[in-house]
Amino acid sequence: MTPSDDLMDAALAVVGEAGVPGLTWKRIDERAGAAEGATFSLYPTMDLLVEAMLGRLITLDGQAWLATGTALNPTSAREFADRMAALTVSHIELMGQATRARFALFLGRPQAMAQGQAALLDVITVILDSIGVPDPAARAQHVVDLVGGTALHALTVRQGEPIDEAALAAAFWRLLR
Image: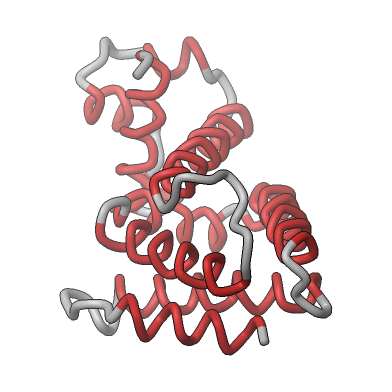
């Protein structure tokens, strides 16, 4: 990890705890254990800071995706469903703070999140198309909605309840058939 990654992880933690209104350069520096002004010197505007946070989220998402299987691209709808379930669980159980930050950014900076959301939908659409899922664009949207809804509920009204990964994989599978 780089010092910039440390700052971005701290920024995500701050947003996950305090929301976008609580995001300040000083709070990030304190959370990261960095010298005062370190974050501001790298990201002197809130737009640059949010852009860097989104980049960090994309990196974390990529690492989480690769951790769900040995191949970059799944070879079947069943494998995709299983990997999406594993990815969703990891976003909740292992990356809860970053996932909370993502939700806060969606609510507080929706215009900044739109491009990343579109890119995610494009990637999932290409994967679904490559494995022969009918109507891949519509199914990609349903997949993203299931991930988001599952994560939102697990981090709020069902906080602390275990997630049945097999049942979640079955739900993804039903969306793809």
